[in-house]
Length: 173
Ligand code: IMP
Ligand code: MG
Image 1: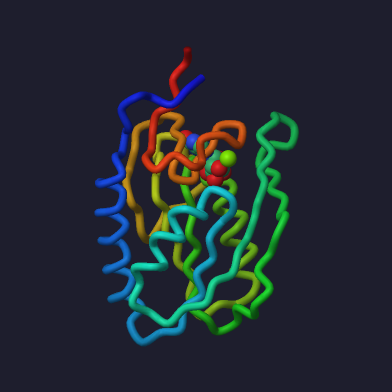
Image 2: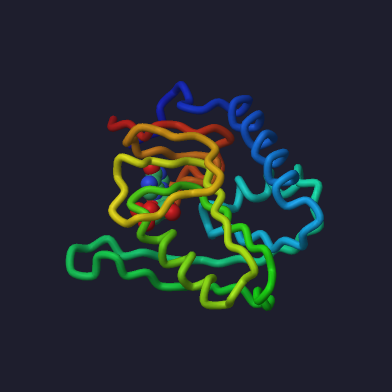
């Protein structure tokens, strides 16, 4: 398996869209204290670019989740890292690489909601609605894509290709 030669989303397209999202978020959260929580590892690159374009006062925290996809434990999500800053009364924006079945995201949102934030929003780079198994939707979406397995700009295949600057379809061969 390897990344397609031509990207599905080019560096230019990604950066243009990230700048648009940053502008929308900056306007929607103007005057508010926000906490941005990238979901590791995949949300790291997106959140890094996005936060540097926000004209908002913000703090950063992180969450890391691992989901099991085997039949018997399907839907089980384990947290390897949890936010350490108090989130009660804060406007929290969770930043994720991709919304696929929605299982990981739903568990992340439940976990953060338990801290009683003032508001909780979800910002994803990619949305694959075709694959959704649980009812989750993002408040902010970079791109809706068809049901491809994609790598790059944070997204991995067996931990590889996260560092690619663009998003590519994973192809056999
Ligand atoms: P979920 O199915 O919505 O729970 O997605 C869980 C995780 O699967 C995402 O956070 C990604 O790490 C991974 N994932 C889903 N689709 C893709 C893809 O197309 N490329 C790389 N990782 C993916
Ligand atoms: Mg992954």
